[in-house]
Amino acid sequence: MKELRRFWRSACWACAGIVFALKTQRNMQIHATAAVLVLLSAWWLHIPRGDVLLVFFSIGLVLSLELVNTAIESAVDLVTEEWHAKAKAAKDTAAGAVLLAAVVAIVIACCVFGPPLWDKITTILMG
Image 1: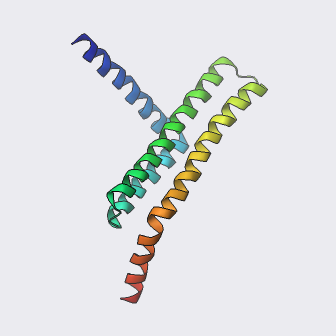
Image 2: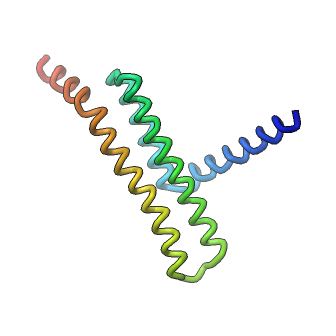
Image 3: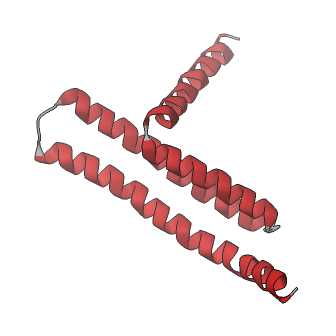
C-alpha cells in the first residue's frame, strides 16, 4: 500500500510538471494544440489504427522532448544567469532534439495524412 501511495505521489508530481510546461512554455502550447488538431484530423480522415499509433508515438516523442528541453533550460538558468558556452550548448542541443523530433513528426504526418487528405479533397471537389 505504501508503494502504491508513493507511486501516485510521483505521478502527481509528474503531472504537475506537464501542467507547468503547458502553462508557461509557448512551444509546449503550440505542440499540444497541434497534437489535438492532428488527432482530430486522424478521426475525420478515418486513419487506420496502425497509422494512428505511429502518430501517437510521434506526438509523445515531441511533447516528451519539449518537457526535457524545459527541464534543461530551467536547470541551466538555476545554475547561472551569465552567458556561458556550455550553458548555450546544453540549451541549444536540447532545443535541437525537439526540432529533430518535430521534423520527423511532420514527415510522418505527411506520409500518414497525405493520401487520405488528397482523397477527401478530390471527393469534395469532384462532387
